[in-house]
Length: 207
Length: 207
Image 1 (tube, each protein chain N blue to C red):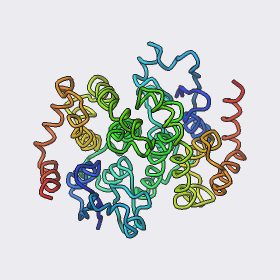
Image 2: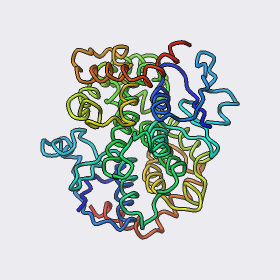
Image 3: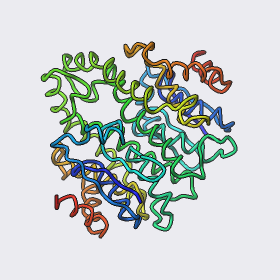
Image 4: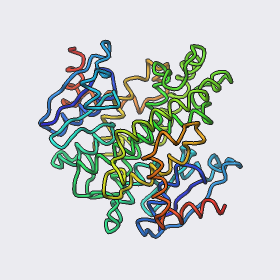
């Protein structure tokens, strides 16, 4: 049995959707960030990074969204969430997901997590000011060069799709005008039409 | 034939080492960052991100270190650079490499690439000031919790090793005292004893 440790409105939604799409046998464990449960001794013993997502299994605990997504795809081959017999196509998905975690999510994080990289309030404010520009530039690249359509990798739905969908939830909040991202917004809309996505989103919203 | 686009003293060294360890048929194409060649029209046509590494093949271009490393391992199974038939063990490597790219490298990047996330000089200076602390905290976690020893994943050398070695090149320059990281420094030293590593490093140093 897999257990996904998550919090609403975080990137853990991508792993939640992938587990649902895969038909995985899993349960959810919600962490309350308002009570800083991700920094509790109990959780740090499980995931010393003190962040979400974390996926526990009988083999141990996995962290980092790209790793969890690839693991779900590889252990549920019948769900066809990644081209498991084509190393180049698999690497293209990994490259897309790696860009989301190391560049897009990082740009976004400068809005409310700037204290990871600077201490004084003026610097944090300077970071917040640039988020619309830095996140916008990332999504311009996704819109023009990376999102093939209708799904990220083209005709076939993969583990790149729930991750893009998840990060794209933050576009408006990051001060990026969605009107300049018609293909990303179309992707976001079509994702919500998938039962697995709707179920995961509804679960998070239900609180 | 694979071509690795790289620049010295960047994270592209990890992919260079992995190609060498794999016995891959590859060539190197150096970009001169002092001439901003990574932003040239020719290179942007190949890699719109304008960064390194990029690995071109007859199938197309791959970017992002974790994706390139996994691709090299999967396409050169005889080199045994990753546990290709064990999804959980493979995911552990992906999780380690994802942490390096999305957290450790990002913390380091606030020293000289702060303009990605803020514009005014006082904010850039505030970011630079925190690098010893933020990079140090990352390496403390690697030292205490993640590096199993003697190699990252334990007894077996994998694609996590060249990536850790590469990022660990920056420890002193980031103002982190190597004396607090004996296991990481031991790993760095033993890596240099591997012929593939020594060859890749010598090639970069030769200019």
